[in-house]
Image (cartoon, rainbow, N blue to C red):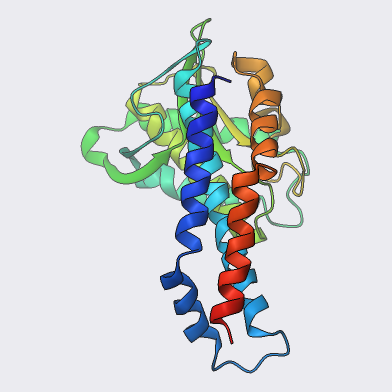
Length: 267
């Protein structure tokens, strides 16, 4: 990674911590907790709340960072929609079909291996949309985390997540959004064969919580897999940079100051 990217990462994290450690934010949390009866001392409840908020913000930051890294990587060409919100269009029939698929995959008699069902779903979406007209379609705004073309001309759509740690309902919603975004992109790029647009869910951390319930294993990547297959940027470099930042004296000092602020205000 370039020093410029490392500096951007550090500055962004410093800003996140500084915002959370502001007197205004801590005072607001004091007011929130001071009237609540709880066996955990108020200062530790406030510290826990701030750390939880930072963890969520950091996860969102990692997702944005990876989208930006894809745009900078010389091995792939990011398309205009990559990393942006866009209104995508598909029919109500496609929308209902995807919802039914997500529901079916959660039923006890649904096969463990979803590969054939997933492939059939994508084929059906293409068939429906290729027969539809623009007046048949409805528009919905979607976040397109990453969309790029490889050196071989392969178009890849990637839904980026920091951790595979969502609860069951959120996990189903992620897959639903993932497939619907793919459907909208398929319409946008006039896809006639599912192999023209590869859909991938990518988790930055390699820890696996859920099996391939809605999306086949071949369409799920974790840790270094996305980097190894498509990018010039090395996963190790990104991971090491983020690990090193946690021990940076400036970062450690901010957390020490945060604890002292909470100790002084939460009396």
